[in-house]
Amino acid sequence: MRAIDGEGGVRSFTFAEVARGAAGAASSLQAEGVSRGDVVMTLMGARPEWVFALVGAWRLGAVALPCSEQLRRKDIALRVKLTRPRVVLTAGRNIDQLDGIADLPGVVNVDEQPFPGEVAGESPRVDTGEQDPALMIFTSGTSGEPRGVVHTQGYLAGQRTQAEHWLGARPGELVWCTAASGWSKSARNTFVAPWSMGASCLLHDGRFEPAERLLVAAEQGVNVLCQSPTEYRMIARRTSLDGVQLPAMRHLVSAGEPLNPEVMDAFKQAIGLDIHDGYGQTETGQLTGMPAAEPVRPGSMGKPLPGFALDVVDEDGAPSSDGELILDPATVPTFFRGYLGEPEHPRDTRWHTGDHVRRDEDGYLWFEGRLDDVILSAGYRIGPFEVESALLEHPSVAEAAAVAAPDEERGAVVRAVVVLRDGWEPREALATELQEHVKQATAPYKYPRIVEFAAELPKTSSGKIKRAALRAGR
View (cartoon, rainbow, N blue to C red):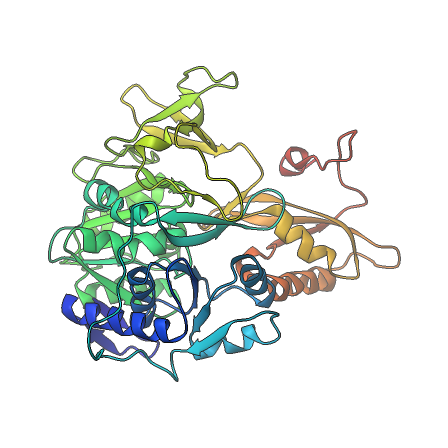
């Protein structure tokens, strides 16, 4: 494992040193009262302590709850309320976001209280089963608050399939998954999937800078790069790919949303490598991928991973080449156990992804869009309810609706249509104020980049917002 900190310092760890670090984290967690089944929340960037914390929690049979550093106090408080973590492990820069949260458990600032490098005596470890809970990731839906997706120990071992057939890591190689800690792809591809193939991983605890990303990859000798479509788009459009030299780079992958064929072509022309697109959900893990050993079909999300039973059905549930993507959970080792506080999803009941896809005659799948109103922006799932709730907290807002608007770099952005209360006038300064309000009320990536004012919102006879009409500009 190799790690770059915020100041550019580089540290490297052998697998033996990682094991000792995880043992030290497990020892510290045990001292905080963590045992089998307890939740361990993390709030830090992609750094060694984050990896040690997750592996240490799994050694104890605990459930890791990695959280994005973009979350704000309200988001964190919701997660604390729903999961009742035994301890919160945080970087010092996030301490202020924990102030005033009710029922907050013990908090460990890993910058001031590092894990021990060596553990006296036998390091703590418990035996776990394939169905024991191991990981929890929160995901957004079209209504209500985010829900906790519970994955089992089997999810970790199940990453081997996508690591071999899509991520394409090889023993001894260096893999860089750039997803921020706290997101589904980060939890599985930053280190779990590379390690399953005997590869090493690169951690970078810094902000995304398009002009620097490929320079860092070149300096570190990255062999496999896993980025979001937005990052690929920003690099292609905001920087020059002319003269880019990546002698160690062998494989590029992308997932989270469809990637534009023209961006794929730009990388192909500049560095001679195709970008292998893939698809998955927080609940399911990776489901499809452009096979690592095959030429890509630009715009396609590839084929189902080996052994994964995926079907396409029409509105009546009949097999079709154009319709909703569904799957048989019994064939997907990374399928989740269920949502937190809800019954487990039966393994013999088909899972409806809610995504509209097209399957060509060769079995390749092509993403056509969401069947519901979840907004996919730069790989993030944003529920309209979350944005609307934040807007309604502002004294000027009587009603609000959030929908997706096309965007060249992010795929889509949040567009908010706002009805003002009496006494308030539409103006640009108010639109900016509403954007800043949402940034403070919830995670900044959810804020509406477009704010429009309207006299009323289009609604059905039962009072539901006609989001399709808003998306169409009506």
